[in-house]
Image 1 (spheres, rainbow, N blue to C red):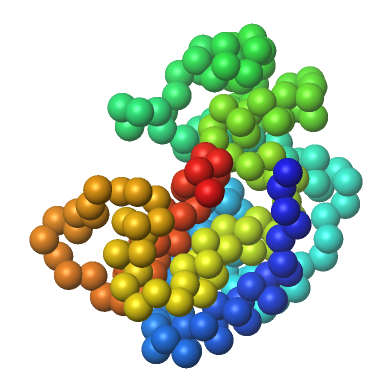
Image 2 (cartoon, one colour):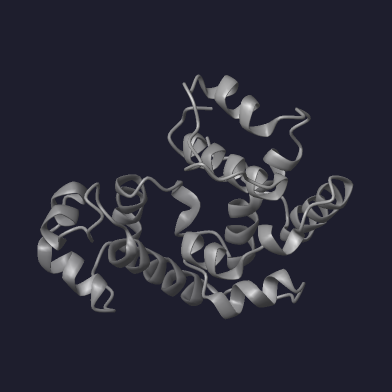
Length: 200
C-alpha cells in the first residue's frame, strides 16, 4: 500500500531544518534538473515549487493529460539494462497492448484505455502507482522523501550504516572521498531505489 506523502511545504521545511542542523548544503539536495528527471515534472514547474510558489490544483482534464504525459515520459526516457531506450515492441508486450498503442502514446497522442493501462506502465518501469496521478507538488515531495530519511539518519557514519542496513559487501566511490552532503545524497538515492523494489 502506498503511503500518503507529506505536503511539499512540510518536506522542504524538514530538509532545511535537518540540513542546517548537520551543516549541509541544501541547494545540492534540491537539484531542479535531477528532480524533474525523476518525476516527469517540467523543470520550470519544479523550480517554482521549490521556491515555494503554489500551483492551482489540476482539473480532471488537466490531471488526465498530466498522467498521459508522465506515461509518455516513462516510455521515452527510461533505459533498459544495456542503457538503451526500451523498444516500443518490448513495452507493448510487457503492458499487454499493441505496438501501435505505445507508438501513439510516444508520439503525443492519447490512445484508448489510459486509466486501465497506466498501472501496468508504472509497474513495468519500476515506479510507484502514484507516479502518473500525483500532482506536481506531490510528485516532488515524494521524490524528496529519501533525502528526508537519509538526513534523519542518526548514525555518524552514513556509508557504514548503508552497508550494514542493506547487507552490502562494500561501497566503491572510485577512490574519491565524498563530502557529508554527497554521502547523504547517495544514501537517499539508494534508499529510494531499494524502497521502490520493496527491499525496505
